[in-house]
Length: 314
Image 1 (tube, one colour):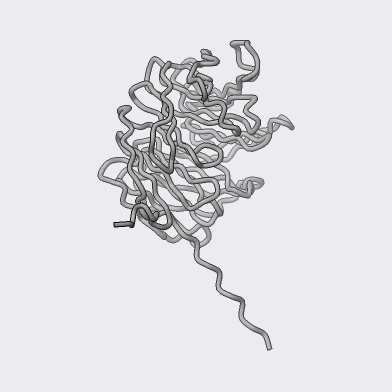
Image 2: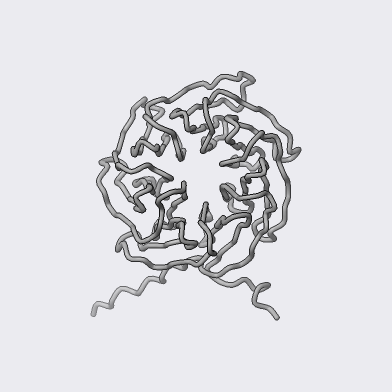
């Protein structure tokens, strides 16, 4: 006698507000989990970068050294370094422990929109409104980039690095994937200015959001459109999108004060998370748990799949 397959446990989504962090750094331009998800970085319009404990919402360190608003940041795999970029055209490498500037690099001709470490934190990669991606050696004292990628016809809005691959999104409406080991470039044309790009957790797909209020899932190897997710509002602002920790759901910020969450396979809207009344500027999904960070105006909210005991205790 054959028994039916057991039903799988439905994936939990971060829909419970665990805490709100008032960042006190003007408008929060970006929020990012660190590599292990215990800390978060916030970038502010007040020219500062802050490191926080996610579980307690406590400020651990503030980094000040940019001349204008900080637009993006990333933490190294071992939490010893942080890199940031700014509208002042600079890229800065920080020592987490001392809070001091290790390197301050100039080379871009305009505001620097996005920045990431490679996996070993030996290279910082920065994307700018000047249409270039510049690669900086974190161990060298040289002030020039070790490589400059200038294939984009307009500004670089977003980039991600996984192993030897670099994924970029540009205002020219193209998603570019560089195989840095083989020296190859693959281009997928979307048509509308790209606001954010990322890889799926399994590395087989790319996700991109654009100003036509669509989020698209593409097969990395062939460029085939696997899914298109709509319903949110994204016409004016550079907003983040991402995949959940198990690649089961697609999430996107929205200009109507919500985070939209769709089932990856079915494309149906699973959750419309009410964050507030303003534009949800940035989001970041925990690397291994159903936990979400959202940034709106001057605050960050932490969301979980379940209420924490401390939050429910009388």
